[in-house]
Amino acid sequence: MKLAKRVLILVENLPSPFDRRVWQEATALRDAGYRVSIICPTGKGFECHFEEIDGIAIYRYDLAVEAQGALGYAIEYSSALFHTFLLCWRVLFTRGFDVIHACNPPDLFFLIGAFFKLFGKKFVFDHHDINPELYEAKFGRRDFFWKLMVQLERLTFRTADVSIATNESYRKIAIERGGMDPDRVFVVRSGPSLERLRIVPPQPELRKGRRHLVGYVGVMGKQEGIDLLLQAVRAIVHDHHRDDVHFGLVGGGTSLEEMKALAKELQVEDHVTFTGRVPDAELLAMLNTADVCVNPDIATEMNDKSTMNKIMEYMALGKPIVQFDLTEGRCSAQEASLYARRNDPADLAAKILELLDDPERRAAMGAYGRRRVENELEWRYEIPKLRAAYRSLWGRPASAAVRPEEAR
Image 1 (cartoon, one colour):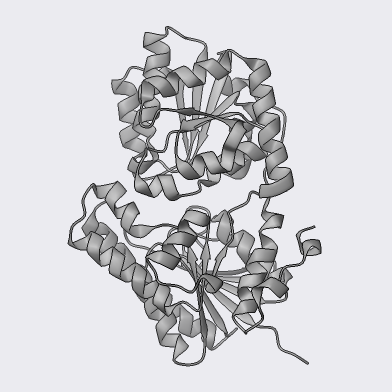
Image 2 (cartoon, rainbow, N blue to C red):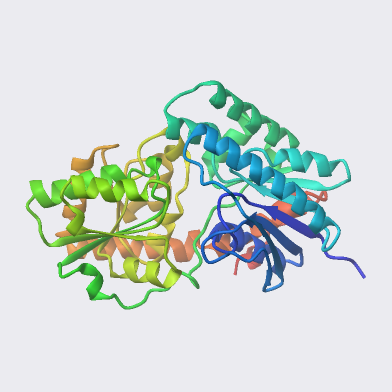
């Protein structure tokens, strides 16, 4: 009897199964016959240090700090690396693993991958964030730490047997900056699951008595442009004199309290609901009630090259979108979105109002986005690509690994 290959997924920035991409990958690999384990941090609602869900073993550790500065990130990542390495040994001597599948950030898991490669294990790098660009977006400089990020990224690609990119921009980085063989770099997009993203009846009370609701879901961090969105809210309320629009912002993060204070400073706090991090049911209620969904990610090299999950989720729910004009954002949404001038809150406000005042256009854009997800972007279309990446680890050519029927 042939034993199943065993996969150990490492992730640092979110707990599983809350991290949707990681959980989709884990379940897809399980369904393909792999035995899957995950090491990740604890988080709100995921405090248990070990549990098994649907055959997937999850090992969690506590992180002492939530990073906000360069020193904070150094402490957080060092702690995560230490706990992850210890838990790798626990998994090795219990469930075992043949492959380490490391998701960044941080670009430090190659140290663990390189160590276990000495014992014949494979190393897969799942490229979630371009860390040099992320550092520059957060801190606005290319200093010693930025140069260190570039070196760590290069060492990660050099260690990887296979790299998984979330889009073609990331694949290009793996090949050109990381020096990887193109045949070992696979694009596996973060496609939404229509089983999870259900269209449900709106909840009118979320509009807070107003005619329109604009929805947002995502992290409340500096590079997400929530400050620009709040400036757009101010323009809508005070410059355009529109009292009929409410904004529902779903998500947590290190800048949440700062953004609440900014809303008060801009005198728009009565027009904005900050939910913090909430369960899926509350997220779906807000987005299904929204007339328009928005993505205010600021125009940085990081955001321009990155595929944002929120865009896919808006499209899956049939919602028209307004966002700044970024390369990968336009690639994902196409005709499902209007595109404001980069980092221009006044134009963002104008585009939001343009859609709110045109229900027929909203309906057409929302239907276009939903069809695009159903026919091209849903997660089931990415599963064969993930399986192909794994089959290539043991020498099977990628071209023979993907069959059209696997995507059904």
